[in-house]
Length: 298
Image (cartoon, rainbow, N blue to C red):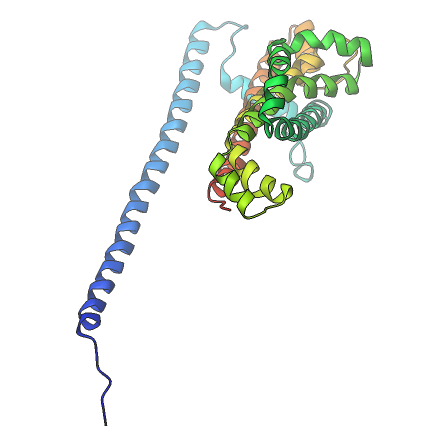
């Protein structure tokens, strides 16, 4: 019987291919290991710098002994007693935390959510047409240049004091970074990819999903980060106005009127921690979505 012939090049090539695949697998493993170590070192370094700054603050405040500059240990203890010493069933939140922190976060979330949805929708609609974008750009730049706190009296006249005024002021001031960045990102979609989409006869919805939004995602998240910071600032500022009965801004004003400096410092530290946590969460979402958007192809 005739035996099947074996190609000599295949026989010689199989060990070579296996060796190449093995080297590639080992190489990728060795690349991932230093990368993981680098990430861990970077995270440890960041926490070390923060701990060092807090330690220096503690030493300087103890040495100075001023009631206007309390050490961070006292501030943290006061914040815990004031907001985070509640029962475990309530996530350790006290009644003061429910009355002050949650309403502020609710107002900020509502204003930021409205700004994000409106900014992305209008930005995509404007950025898809270069002519429309050129016509609207002066108006957008003018609106962005107006200081957000200067608009609060306008909303007070229109809506009076209260939660609707606070949410409206946050949303109107935070919408511009999202809108402008989204319009710029949508307008800079690769023309070649748009031509390929036309050849493939993609529908407008498919172009939006597979081309425009993935291309604009980095700029969208840049605008969202700016809007998040503005939302936090406007949330505090709107709660400093008369007619507010709760919130972190109200706690600041009330503590200042009573010369309760520990509560003032605790509120400031709380705002910084909230801003950092919210920004970290947004960055985590950005890494997932932007990474996915960059690999999207027609």
